[in-house]
Length: 365
Image 1 (cartoon, rainbow, N blue to C red):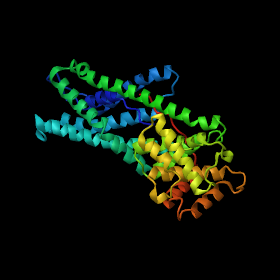
Image 2: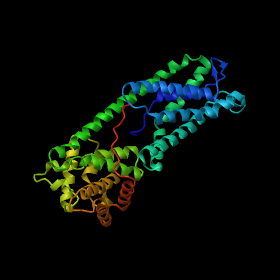
Image 3: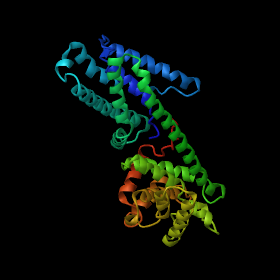
Image 4: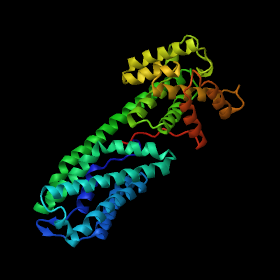
């Protein structure tokens, strides 16, 4: 989710140009190469404001946009220019269904490209990334495809004046995306600030909650969690030690993994109570509250937080000279009751690929 940059207005406009057959009742004569050239020029112009604000150009997103539109143009323009389009779907509702089906295939192509680019950039498994992209198609994807078809058909009848008129609803949608992105960013910053309270109070080591959150999200992706589940997992991982603020005697170095089971569950219950008072979603408080339970009684997110927190505590303990390998071995020894074996092996695979994934801020657009 953090790498997805929705631009519904630009995407719908580019797809409409790729599917443009008639303009004000007159046939057009542009082909695939002209569609690609115009879209490349438009994408480059669109990058100028980002570069002017000091943001690096998102060349992978630009390449993805061009390739997706090129796919739609290759499927449509040769059929239109050869006249076979009139003989195959005909006109009226059949043409609309044909265009919607074509854009559905284009959306699938875009999801495949997006997952491949994200995998190359992050090193995360391709399967979970593709599932995330396919789930996202149920959101803004149908609106972009339908608007692209309406733009193309409207321009065919009314001319290019139809484009700005039909762009207004999607422009409002994009403004809503930016508002939602800003709200999510502010909310996440609030959660992060709350999580830092344990570090400021000296209850945990500096950066502990952020490291646990980053590694938990990486393990969650490895196990195929959805975007919503990953968000809950990240928030719970950031707040997993907040119960230590209620302790009279702090835990040495904030490491809860070596504590007796009853004491760890008591701290987790305190953390769940504190989390509920902060107003976070109920499922986040449940994960915080149940992170110390036996794994067979825990939700998936709590199992991940428990494993990653224990690894972070054990690997950072100076009494364990073996570091990461010794910590993993100790986690494997505890898979009979405390840690789910699949989560431990998922953590091992993440660490083998280079390990500590960064926590990426949520985009605002």
